[in-house]
Image (tube, rainbow, N blue to C red; front, top):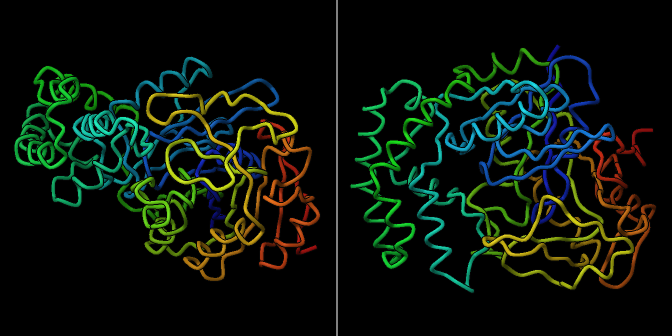
Length: 402
């Protein structure tokens, strides 16, 4: 029997509840579950909280970990091997074990150079920051495209000296030129770290050590065929997709919809079961860029302080808005589904406890019943709702197949 295949995709600018959705799906089915991370990297912050009191914010581990799922990084993900041990050790301290992490051997990694270049750029931009998390994903993507990639296979197979020498060559051949292009020489706080041999030696040692948390995979289909359920967990949201010109330059460097997932599945004989699109009952954005109908959160009936998306120096504070219209709400979903013709789709609407069970549109509040009607007209067969922060309290409100 072939595995069930699901995808979890954010409808907006991120922070919709993708961690909640992933854990909800991982807990639904018996048997072995693998959650696949396929875009972005450690900048994701997906929160899972259960009624029993378990809570964790996931970055590189999958959000299905609390429900016993394994994690797989495919080769469109950019893991940060330096930061990995922090998350793994935090999880072990809280729950007594480290979830299994697998990865394709040709997966490119984010380097310390990428992170420092990213931070220096944002520091230089001052009030004109793009809203980056400072985690170096765009810089990593550009470096790989320029022919200076470093893969997990490199980290595993090269000796410490060989790995350090490879990174030294990248620093001299690529990083110096990138520094000049970005004109960030004056940001000495980060430039000093960028060329510190002590920093580089420490970095190489730590990422070599952290390979102990990861097992490499060479045959994607063979590996995935060993599971009963596969869930592709997406970072960020559709409105932050790298190709979203309307929001440029305030976008991520990765594909935030089905593109990477379709590409990965094309290397196997597997097919989608359902794509779950996740949205709050209102719109948020954490970072710079346009946000129509933006206002303070007073339009919410019961505002809950967000424990994950706290104000920080890179993204500022979480921003709030209403959706312009139903057409506006469904447009990103409709466009994304074109990448996977024939795939069934479902909608999970979160944070309904903050809106009194309504969806916040610019002209008026609308009911779940009205949303379900609109979803059905647009080919979305199931609608789930969440009125709490707990992943084990999602409810199926509408099943178009019944």
